[in-house]
Length: 229
Image (cartoon, rainbow, N blue to C red; front, side):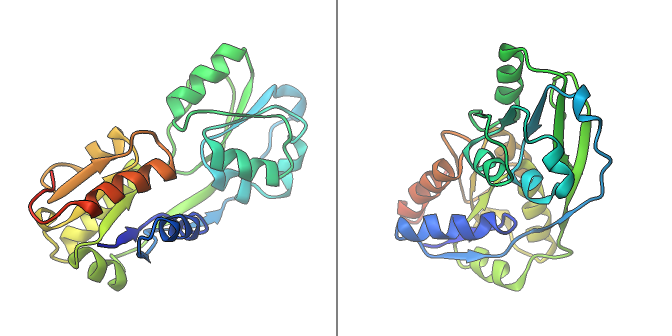
């Protein structure tokens, strides 16, 4: 059995490489195209730290980001931390992989005010400070043909976010695929809940990381017919 990778590039390619290292074939068919958005940076002197809940914030914030690279950076997880480091930050604290844990980490360290660099579709952090929307993840209009073929052929669809989970179900049903015939692996309970019930097989990652998601998908790939939950 193969995997269906739906996350945007360049993350999709990194997931494909990790899947290949596990001996799993994968079809890459992103459901979103990420593009930068113009934003008005606040006065850096009024900001105590920066937070990012996606690596896309580091990739798409543009030259204005350099006004803040001297500040502590709170990253939602390791991938976002790596992208922030590549963008010029060197005082980085990485969270456990979800926004709630990141908020708790920021509160515990007393950081603030915090500039949250986010996507157009984001969950607010419960932290004092402004939010700047620096990128947009625009959904595709329909499920790509390669995704239809892979999902219909039994591939396990990787759902990297609640938004992707909802999109995949809607688009799959829109082209006549029955969820009762499809297999999914979700990166979090929230993503699984948004995907909804009725799948032929479903698994949830133990942690909200790419590696844990691939491990969950691999468990489904190891199951024989009729053993899905």
